Length: 452
Image 1 (cartoon, rainbow, N blue to C red):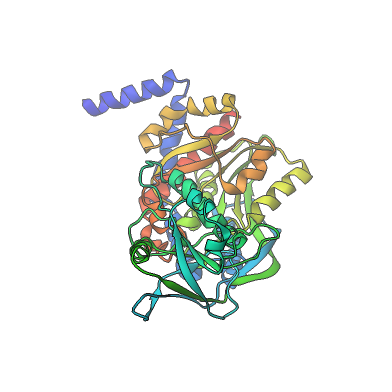
Image 2: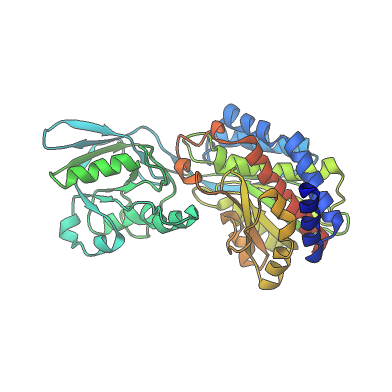
């Protein structure tokens, strides 16, 4: 009796918000289909185990382009094509970091060069380490204190934020700017504490950038426990660091984003769902962003399998080069503008394959409020947060054109334990959580397609 009463109250709540019984039934059909017959998990296994990490410009990335093209055809896309994109080519190569303490012995540290960093040309570069724990502390250092030194930016990922993406945003400036800041004051290279929510010794890579007209010196990341140990050493003695790395930019090359769609029955206005096909060159790129790719393909497959007659064109975009250039997103936006192609809505899934908790809405208040009025439909699926205002990185060019943009918000508590590391593997992805994310994406696109 309690179960029946609870279901009745839930349905009444949906209807009171102007949602039809038909919508709640369709939501259930979508969920049942994906959780029972969804292919996203097995496709993610294929992508991660057969191809692996997929850095832009690599042979593995080109293999993933062919893989995604075939999977979109298998899912039932009416049209599949490759969109040309010029992408930067960055190569890591062999690398090592050692420290020498007062006993004179050298010790190897786990490390990763930051993405897009220049290396040492295969030569040893060494110097005394100085540590700062904040940007303000570094700003106060005179150039003569930094000259010929190695600067260790030891800013810890804040554990105070409940939403870990806020902690990531808070710490990211150290990763992106450390090299140029160090170079401006004559330092030799920068060491950055990894942007990690975990207390372990796993280094995290990720993009950095150089300022124009500033020397391009190396930047590397170390794990949290190594950072703590290095801090303890520096309190009591002089420590020398020695870096040898072969990483660097190798120009540009022609590559592709992969696009597939099912044509609208009413008009050709486009609704986009997508993720980025590339990953960093460590781990398997499972959560970031293999999960988003297979979830997006799952949306298209589910529309076809359930025979949903979409009013507007549903388009899946597997973006190239999100990690170290966003060239795929930029090129897609440029093409939309050149073709004057009408887009109604775009959503990206690039925050891991964990259980969905919400959808961030980067659009005007009229459309935000309309989507929020559907929230009771999503509650049975654990999706409740529609308050955040942001969208996926690849969608910024569309958002700048005034197109309503969004991003799926999975539970974030574990994401930055493994983000941009060797730990981002298929084994870290739970099948049901991954497919629940695909369910939420399909449900929101169903509502957009029906009501906009």
